[in-house]
Length: 140
Image (cartoon, rainbow, N blue to C red; front, side, top):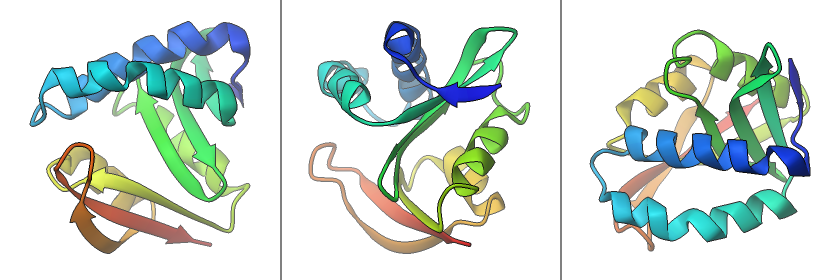
């Protein structure tokens, strides 16, 4: 089941975010993500997000800010089981276009997005992390 995130979900979603972000970005220092925690939590309070649940348990989430897919994370142990694709398709059904930033070294995420119709539009260094990232785009 996919639904809009509500205020009561935020702690569960943040647990998923911090765990999955650190795991997916092993090429970066863990402290970078810990320093982003408050900023991300505030963004979640101000931006529409969707959660995907399995038997009432949140197993992933996505944040969409206008046409920007700001986040899409699935809990460890549920990745590769189709939850990310279901969540992304739900969002794509509501949008004409999307874009996102994905670190070049995050091969798993890049392959996931390419499989789901995204293409690389540009590449630049992220000013906060100093890591090279791709801006990826999808159009209906």
